[in-house]
Length: 129
Image: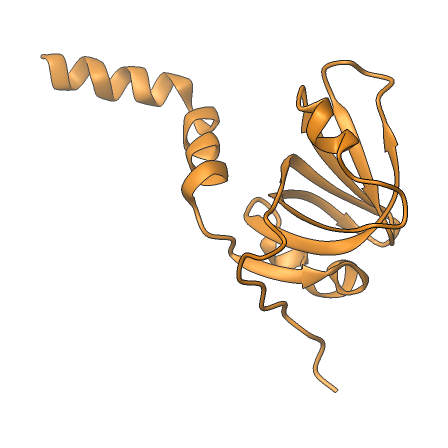
């Protein structure tokens, strides 16, 4: 009975629990340089990815959704982690982990997103010549 209740509780929390666990402990399905996301990342929609790119700005107009903006129209939604997004300066190279939600040239959305350790392993997929 207890196991059934735990399974039911796990199912009712849905993707939130699983996605949160994957953000903290899961490995990215793929890693990309910012300039390659629009052309290579579409098969990874719904999966955790890592992106390396230059910070172009931040948007804090919604206090519950801090957004870090990387080059090539990549919008990384940090949610309530505004201080994490504030830690990046314009022109700085940053690494971001998160779930790819949308992948169109000029409008790439990663939500939720978190900053990544720049010394962590990074092996981006590259376009074939």
